[in-house]
Length: 78
Image 1 (cartoon, helix red, strand yellow):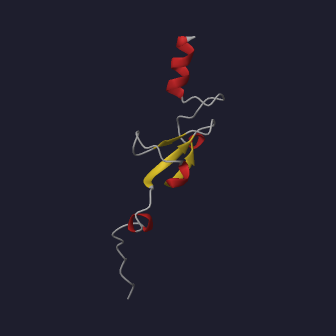
Image 2: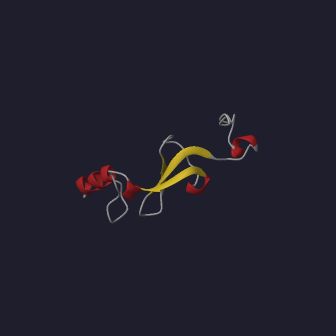
């Protein structure tokens, strides 16, 4: 008979009361990171559960490192 699944009540970081984020850090070409779950999250990418590069998403930074909506705003302002 297969073993039943173990239900974890909290992640290891939660249990140890460590600063962390359960979201995904999206790394941009300029080195900046955004959190997929919380736009106000200011934790570094290393403190996120998962990390991906913006190139893996449909919307990616331009060569200068600006996110698509920011690049359009910067172009319109200049």
